[in-house]
Length: 320
Image (cartoon, rainbow, N blue to C red; front, side, top):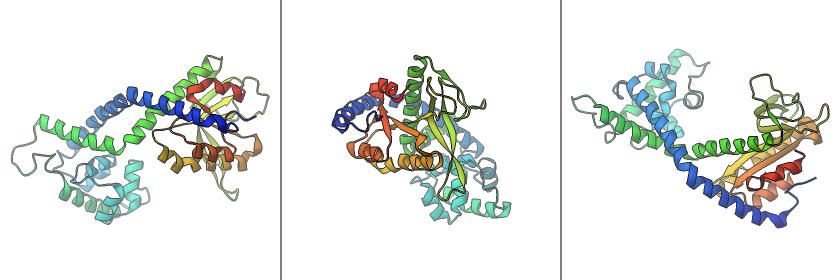
């Protein structure tokens, strides 16, 4: 039985309430989440400056030892350099740069000689474009003072946080959404199963739930299998032996544009789950924020239902 996807006459009222709830949360919590991240990032930037002798010693050896400093170095230039811009300017391997950015390491299959040659190109660009208005000690004989280093680190941290502002807010919102689900379920006698202790989506006792569990699915053709993470997996109290759990994805959005760009993500995940497990799959959304009728209609057409965070008791209608 559908909960919200078959009630389009109710969607506009729900959208208005959801937008109001998100905006209220944003005004209260988002600034602190951003500031807290900026404080941590400033410390990371200061560590980068220390490892590079305040950017006076940027070399392949340093990047090999500390590949995680590359984002800081990109934000230390004038103008700041995006990942793809750095790849183009330095004429280096996209694999190298993206591996350093995402995995904080060098590609395993790249030889030391090849990597060092590429890293020389990167350091050349960083040195040439390093911002003298931030690093005011460039070109003078006196070393950088502690206040100057801290001020420079704060500016670079601001740039980093500005580049990652949306992920910072999304991460804070996801934590809050999962905490709300946890509180709701535990108030009704459900028991939380932390991951890492052998918890499997297909071996959960009735009346339990967990977060960020991997569920294997077969890709097109049925040969290759991959794991997809599910935000919330719940085994209802009344589930019989061998029953399939309920899946919920926590989704939040601060504007309508991004949700319509990303609406296919859930549909693809649903299609993969159905092709692997059939009609027993119950994949739903937990929504807060800017989700318009176009988004809701698209998901409903894919057989995806949802609960709104501003009306959490709808979760009970899913059999919980």
